[in-house]
Length: 267
Picture 1 (cartoon, rainbow, N blue to C red):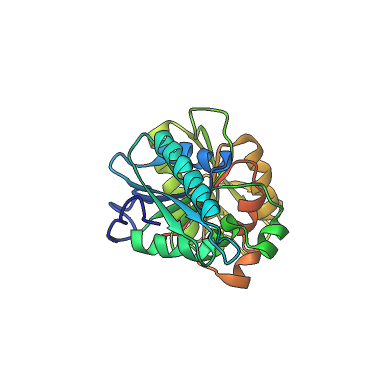
Picture 2 (cartoon, rainbow, N blue to C red):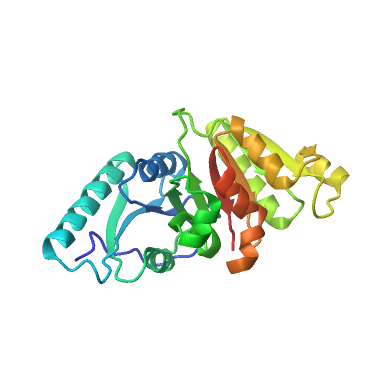
């Protein structure tokens, strides 16, 4: 199966410091994936390069020609719809997933030089994501760039309300910077939350720098509660991978939040 377009050459993790400049959107034909397209269409920079990618998983049991043809047609239809949602500015690609979907996407991220990967969520329970290797869950652990997990937002004015989790770390500063950039572009409100539970934080300094709300709850509980009235949660990533990442705040809230979640990873 020939790809619909050749991948762009890698040109760094961000253009002008923006994580919305080289975006890969994972397409699986679901409404969740198309919601990711709608949100990327809003957030992408004007000159952004966007890859809409479908991975057709052709395992050893899929050898009948008519089955392969049907999978290819479904992937092509899904990609056409994705490009339509993205305003026609995306390059569409489908990949032969002779191995597994996640390795194919990771290879494409590296080749494309993506600054952001966006995926829909099928609302699996978190333990199911961990055990069965849901693609969104695996991207949170393994992607070399920022990750957005898109959930349905009824408003076309996405993102109206942004929540940022801040723990005083440089990664949290990056998340807040991105959130404020989005707020400036879209007229959004930004609510910064820090927790009294967990690692020591200089609360006076943090309040002075960020005007954060200090909440006496575990950071995961505080942030998940805040997402019930938000369109987008932005958190930083400390670059944890594998088993270490399973207990991280960013990974846990990405699974449990009520709204879309942007996990910021910067070089």
